[in-house]
Image 1: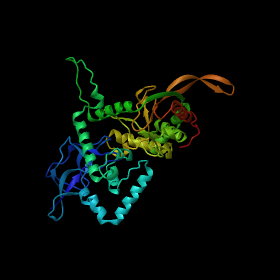
Image 2: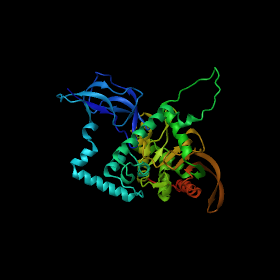
Image 3: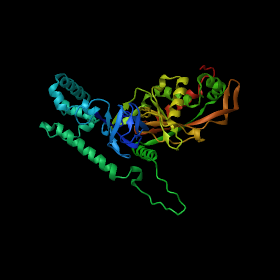
Image 4: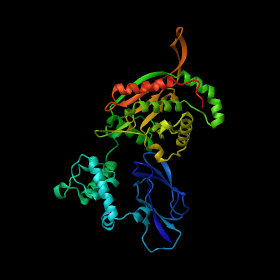
Length: 433
């Protein structure tokens, strides 16, 4: 029988490693192609990993609890077919060759790398020359041009060589590994003495809570948080939803909540103020062209997860409602893929679902803003009419807009949330699904 290595798969953009939670199969167990073999946790989501081939799980190479980089072998599968007499090889190993050999063997590849190098040099203000091989390695390893410029070169005129790159990557990996195993998380670095009595219960944080804690502290450390508040009159939305919700459920087979209205208004406001839809990379501002809105969803465990609605500005209320319901249901049942949790450019959190009227949400990095929508409550309000002002009962809600004051000034942050409120208040009662 032939054998093949099963490797840690890439499970979404920006994900470079996974933690093995549970092996669903034991050594010697038969497995079918696409049958789940193990459960893996990433910093985005927990997911089951299927087998790429049918056969027998011959050997498990990584234990439960191990943190494994993407592309690293985790198991050996004995597959149906004649033995080729060779050592087990992974799919990635079979398709990869040393870059020097590829360059010497393929003039076309050399030309492509040279063109990539020239293009990269045009895009960068760094005047140091980099060979096509160095640029190719930096691209594969996710090293930015600004980081590349900091690597000390041992070549002629200080040029970075292949050995410089390999030494830098090795040192970087060792530092990362050392920090992971010896340095306590940032949220625990400044430990405060806690008095514990005999009646107290000590609960260990689960993996997701530890990640949330780390990210929240990181965000407060990175971004200069400011929050602006606006109260919006959403009476038209409440009345219209009450009028159509029964017919909508019969027609679409699912309820329509208030969240699609909020997302629709936010997407329109982002198009009006595109400098809210940005990220910060050092001293550079990255303006995002896609409007991908994350929606915070509370899980049964009490933790929060943020699935992303991609290109939210291209969806109408029905499309948004279906997308939100689908993502929320699958989030609560741990059925989301890593890609559905990545790529967000702006986030909305509905604190009103917990009965809160407002909040000061923390910005999810690397975004620069987040909107919290509060509970809708009935209030007496002054309403202007053609015959004069009157006191009426209106449906009101607070919008809490937290933004990164490094790149979003108070005028932009305030105008944006005011524009969201304007779109909500201007909702047409005669709208048709």
